[in-house]
Length: 40
Image 1 (cartoon, rainbow, N blue to C red):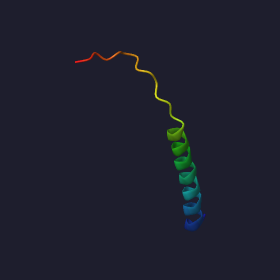
Image 2: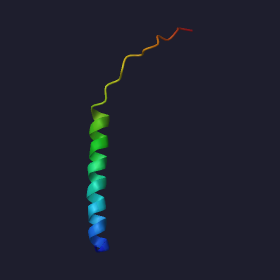
Image 3: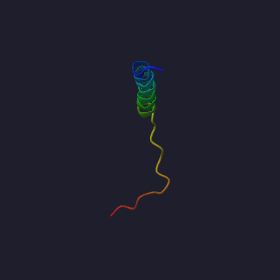
Image 4: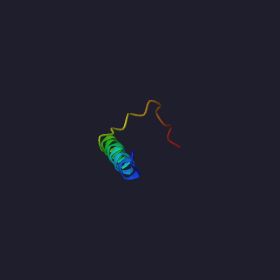
């Protein structure tokens, strides 16, 4: 394989990886606190 093709494949994989992380971050829902915090 030529280096140019490998770089293009790697950049596409990174783009998909970044898109997945962005989608996961934007759809993240905070879970309720399992342990109630004591007020000081």
